[in-house]
Image 1 (cartoon, rainbow, N blue to C red):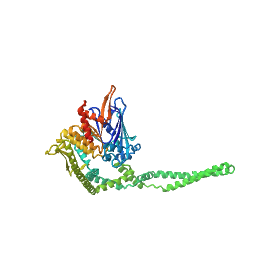
Image 2: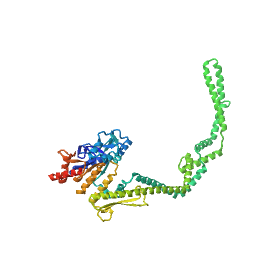
Image 3: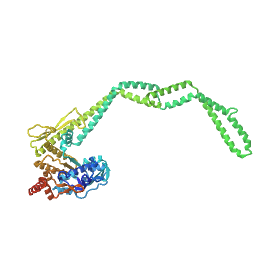
Length: 588
């Protein structure tokens, strides 16, 4: 339930605080006083689009804040916990539920049920704040934590349901008619159709893609068979290209390498080579070392060097023995490398990627070759998906027919009270088995017979402006009763009616106020008199600026306000008496 609103520098409001209670609250005032400003503020707090024009002239930003009271088992409370936005929320201990009982009279069980969302009486405070700057930038907070506009809009679906003064025009649109009818259908039935339609659409796409591939499969199969035959003839192995590339280098330079090895070996081992000469040097120094100990380390170095030279000579000899000059093998390796490079250029891949390419092509060829079996499986999957969708759509259609009967009876009864005596409302529901969509297979249209004995026609074709407003009001009241929110707002939805019909509308809204918190912007005294409390909106002008005030009216002030709504600026004893009578009758 909406408890408190604080407004700073918004439109023509400089600073304003409004306390709201349970039941039905009428928001009244002169034309142009700004009665709908409060509704605009609530819309912005719940994610409506804002702009710089909403900031009061001379201010840098508009600052809006609202406090809601939520039951612990309220769906919004669960969402806040999921979003980790409950840190600043604290339980309310001010006896709000008791005040609701006192305000409505009796034990308040009806009002308690909606506002506490069950028998749970534990409630928590939810704070929503939004700031809009003169640059058009907007920021929002829930319980002191920054949030996005998307989060605000998600939260709003559990807090407030707003009906504007032109909302009845929307009921001329078939999608809106379908949505209203579906509000009387269990959500699980609707979501099942949506899920089945999603699965059906996916199955159709998969089958269409497979058929498109199959249409070109013949040419593709021929190409793949030719290309895989080439690659299979090469039979590339992982890592082979690098291996034979290295082998080709050795084979191509075998003679040059062999000659170098042999020359190096001879340069070490022949009579004038490095090894004999090193031996001569060692012999010459050994005699001298007997007389000079400083030569010993040098001898050790030379001995070590001679040993390493001998080891190198042995390795050169062994390596030279293993080198073979094989022109035939070189020719074979050159040919294989050439095939690798040719096929790599043809397929625009690296030579060492040819083994993977062959595997991919073979897999695709196998898949295409088994295309008929794959198509058959996809067709079976599509058939199963269509059967599941048809079953879900038929279940939704049956639920809609029950809801349509319920809605038709309720609206027909309501419009009798709204001055359309003998009128009849109905729902034309045509099940189209050949159609598929996320909302089922039904074509839905609201029908009305405005006069006794006349045939029902589509709502958009036969209803006059006054009749449409009354039918629309009945639909809004009935739809509101199905909403999972605590607060309902009606912004001049009573336009186009008057007299006894207005009194009936007031009683209906007042009855809603025993289940929900109802805020109604109205210019009709018959409606305002039925409210549990009344707020008066007034505009005040000074030399510097114009600003709006909202005052809570006590019983005597309500009498004067209703009298003024009845008789204009000048109040007479008769208008005051009439106003008092209207209020007494409403309380009775």
